[in-house]
Length: 292
Image 1: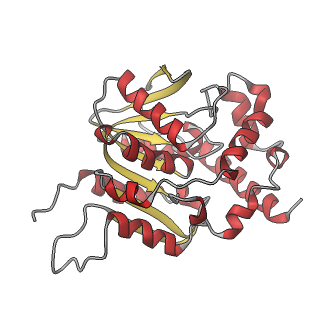
Image 2: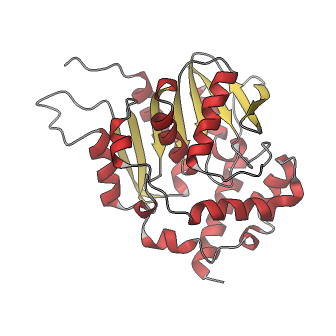
Image 3: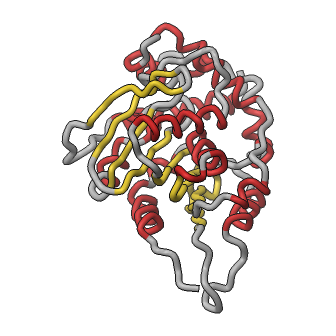
């Protein structure tokens, strides 16, 4: 097997181990439930109170994997709605393609189920793509978007990232905390190989959200990347130009969208940078429009 695949799987497994060892401190027991949306029974948790913000995890992950400590911080001032998307965590898979569009429609359905007219959305990796699609497909439901480490086209990934998937197999996760967490949470614990292959099929498909569609979105977006996270630097620039432009901010009002690139940070280690990222996210979500 390609040693790069083994290395990537190792770091994903180690990240999950680290995140699962965290404790959501100072939290009351959340409100939990299953929303019937688009043929799914979609698991969700609600923590805290205030303005609503939806958290969307990455591929292969769940609420406990991506968001443990984030929930503790964000729910101090906000109503945090953490969800587990199709096939992930406690949400069973169904006979339907896992696409950014389908998952975005599920999030919109969840907000309808909870009678929440609009919310901020924070997504990581797969979840970040879903967050952008929510803004494209359901603009009335999205106030602001925080997109952490995701391109809007498949060719936005560096070649090495795209070359990873064709030879990837579920066995690289065999015996890892990632497989154990799936079996612990999933209503179909014996279908881990099928779940991984479903995600692989998604990753292999070309996709393009459309530069014109991204530019036309009304929701301000905060793009967050690592400087070594597998997304091409010119693609990052393209994304921010579409939403933020190139502005001499001392001379005229700045864009309502934002960009952050964290140093010495990979796709996997981004989620461990909570102490750096969450204050920036809170500042972005709390920001009022500048006077023109």
